[in-house]
Each structure stands twice: as C-alpha cells, then as structure tokens.
Length: 345
Ligand code: KG4
Ligand code: ZN
Image 1 (cartoon, helix red, strand yellow):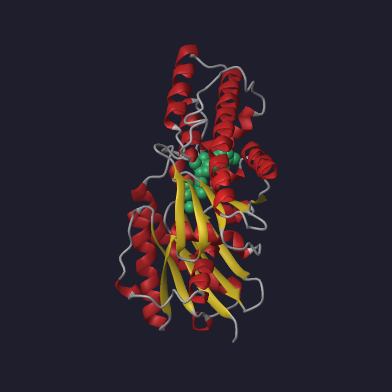
Image 2 (cartoon, protein in one colour):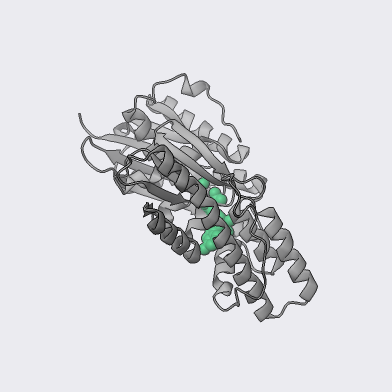
C-alpha cells in the first residue's frame, strides 16, 4: 500500500488550525504541515475566550489556513485520502464552522470525512512522535479539561479521573486575573512565581490524600481571592508570593491526584513492560508541573512522555493523525459522517 495522507481541521476553541499528516505502514508518521492561527490577541482585552468573536474569526481564517496547510505540505486536495475535522467537544460556533467547511471540502473532492473527538486527538497525539504502545495513561491539563484517560486504542478509552469543578488552566487564568496579570494567565503566573515565596501562604490542596482519583480546583481559587483581598492593595512582591504559593499548591495537589491513577494502572496491568504517562494540554508547558510529573513517574516506574508544546496545545496535526489512526483501526468507515452534527459536549 502507498502512503495515507489526511488533512486535519481544528476549530473547537480559539485556535484555527489545519495540517496534513502522512503515514506509511511500518514507518513513523510525518507531519507535512501544521498551521495554527491563535486568536489570543482578539480575546486578550476580554480576559478570556469570547465564543462569538471566536466563531467569526474561524469563518474569516479557515479557508486561508487550509490552503496554506496544503501548500506547505506540497500536496493538492486530490492527493489527500480523507478530511478529519473536530466534531466536539468545544465551542459550538467554531465546531460548526470547522465541520461545515470540512463537509464542503469532502463533498467537492469526493474524499471521506472523518469526524474526530477533540479529546481523542489529544489522547493519540503522543504517538505522532513516539512509538508509545497501548494501553497507556493520558493526563490532559488545559483551559477546558483536567482529566486522566486510559487509552486502550483508537476509539477505546476509559475516563479514570476528571475535575469535579474548575479546569486546572481555568484556575491559573482566574488567579492571574485576581492578581492583575494579563491573559492567558498560566504563563504569567509561572513567570512571576519565579521571584515569589512559595511558602508565604498555605493554600488548600483539594481532595489531597483521598482515595477517589478526581481533581478539584475551585476551593484553591477561593482561597487565593481571600488572601489577595486581605492584603490589598497588592505590592509586586505580594503578587509574586501569591502566585508562587498558588502554583506550589497546584503542583502538590496534581501529583497526589495523578499518583492514584498510576497506582491503579499498576494494579490492573501488572504485566505492562513500560507503563507510560503522557501529558497534553496547554498547562503541560508549566515547568514545575512537568518536573513534578517526571519525578512522580520515576518514583512509580512509569515512562513520562511530554510532547513539545506545539503538539500539546490545540493543533490540527493531532486531528489528522487521529483520522489516520481511525483508518488503520478500521473505524473510519462507520456511519454517515456527512450527516453528523457537531456537539459541544
Ligand atoms: O491547551 P490550551 O492551549 O487550550 C485549551 O484550553 O484548549 O490550554 C490553555 C490553558 C490556559 O488556561 C493557559 O493559562 C494554560 O493552558 N497555560 C499554562 C501555561 N501555559 C499555558 N498554565 C500554567 N503554566 C503555563 N506555563
Ligand atoms: Zn485541547
């Protein structure tokens, strides 16, 4: 068989992205192009993603981004075997734009449309660069998600843990806002925390030590607000100390929570030769979080795989790759994709 090439389209949040990925049996996949247009600046003034603005920006950008992805890959639409597009979860406006556009391209070119669940894109993304064997655990930490998935294969997942309230990235973004730091909050909290005293405040560690494997972050946010209000107006050093103390609480809580699922994996797959934890999502860019996960994995005998930030955050290469994984697994021919409607949840 020749090479399979898939065009991927991702529009579920505030990134408009397209990519072409190629794969040949017995070889590692190749990312022929990956283009990501971030709408960060359009949303920064509002301190978060505004769905209406996002949907309009996707409409304006998508055609050009798809053309650019094909051009950079050096392929015509006729050289592509299928179109993979994110069908959910995400913001419904962006999903509609992406799916409508993918359906139009599929109809016009006579190629198959493969609807992709955004979480499946993240879950399989590590296999673009590493030959990670199933089953493995995936920790997704982003602005919208905090969960651990058991990945048994394409289309075969079990959710082992998830947040009972806020997503971890949301906690970073809200803390940043309270401290007067610009959006997106995560990188700015990490930056100012460098000069802060992480032990000045003892913020709560929600669910720490409990047997259930889930996450919780809203109590932490409340504690940060109380601390900030109590000492307002905040001097630069106060901001740095709160950021550092917040980040310490997040890191310690996260490590404790993730340990539950690693232990469960050990129990359920005692024969696994190289148990692996993969991390994805924007929060995976955080240095102290990566370091804590790495040392946790070393302690419990897990391989730790953290794809480069460009593959960890939202992108279309992971969507194209999920399409290829589905084709390989014989899952791409199911149902009538042209009749499929995007779903926000
Ligand atoms: O995966 P992502 O780019 O988009 C989605 O949420 O889908 O993740 C964005 C989130 C934001 O909440 C942002 O504040 C957070 O990731 N983030 C970070 C860091 N870089 C991005 N959080 C903590 N530390 C960072 N260095
Ligand atoms: Zn995502």
